[in-house]
Amino acid sequence: MTNSRRVAVVTGASQGFGRAISAGLAARGTDIVAVDLTEAKDTLLDVEKAGGRGISVVGDVSDPQTATKLEAALRDEFGRCDILVNNAGIYPNVPFAEVDFDLWRKVHAINLDSQFLMVKAVLPLMIAGKWGRIVNVTSNSIALPIPGLAHYMSSKAGVIGFTRGLANDVAEHGITVNAVGPTASLTPGGVSNIERAHIEELAQTQAIKRPGTAEDIVGTVLFLSGDDSAFVTGQTIMADGGLVRL
Image (cartoon, rainbow, N blue to C red; front, side):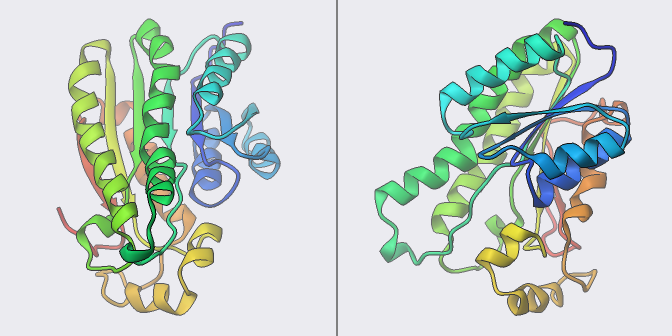
């Protein structure tokens, strides 16, 4: 099947940043493939309300079989892929002395390895289309003195390295690769891992003194996934209210 509209894959799409990004892309005329552990029903409703078409691919993003399933769905349902937003991630706050190798690997598998797998799944279609936008979600925490996140910071620093390296390898195909770093925000994932009071306290150290929301990352992602960012690649933008400045 072929599709005249642009098609975006968004991982971790069922809630928070992923759901907001999916709705924002759909409002811009993009169809959505929502990838998550469970069917992203609410996200697909948002996409439909915005005038887009959406499908759900259910699976663990760190599992190569999910990447295989995604590639098949893209080819069967749309025949193309133009945008990939690697948003899925976990961030358990655990003192390093209590982090065992299983947790270390799980965090890196979901936060970093999954981005490799998703890129591998969509890249042939982007190359065929001679156009693509890859946006990897990192975190501003890599530059902050927050205890209990050594495993998380390691994975998110890896995202930035992957972004910079991949940008070099795919530029000749009309594909850009950039990263976006949000701050601790009032999202379902955010408040389940960090106390709301701490998020609000952290916001007071930002230039823009309010807690971030899921919608605050959307504008940056839309820019990096569109035509206006054609000469921007290998970059990391912190959409965090001015807390971390690179």
